[in-house]
Structures are given as structure tokens and as C-alpha cells.
Length: 71
Image 1: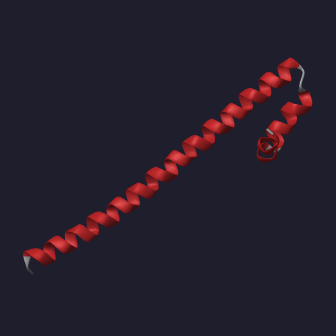
Image 2: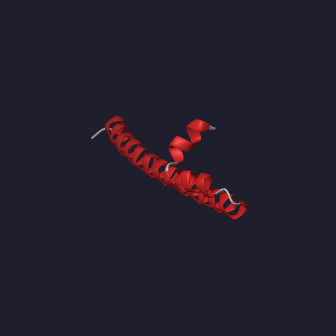
Image 3: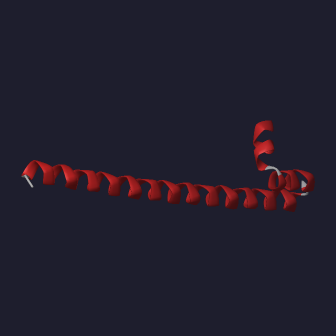
């Protein structure tokens, strides 16, 4: 086995490992963002509910994607 072959094999394994780590970190980041958005919507709905905007709070929690289209 030559040095060039060893370098090529090592590089391929390293790239595969980097891809796996990159995908895992991307998924983790997306999960954190989704959790933060959900928590923010819950806080906003609670504030709306407390102010007496019950229908708006209900709409915000039950159909958040449709609500964001209206805004």
C-alpha cells in the first residue's frame, strides 16, 4: 500500500465522518429551532388569551402555519 493510497482512503473515511456529523448537527439545530418556535407560539397564545383574544390564541395554537400566512 502506497502513501497516496493510504492518504486517499483516510480522506474518504474522514469525509464520510464529516458528512455524518454535519447531518447530525443540522438535524439537532433544526430541532432546537422548532422547539423555540413552538415555545414562542405558546407564550404568544398565552398572552393573547390573558388579554381576552381567545379566538386568536386558539387559532395561533391550532393552525400556526395558516396563521402566519395572514400576517
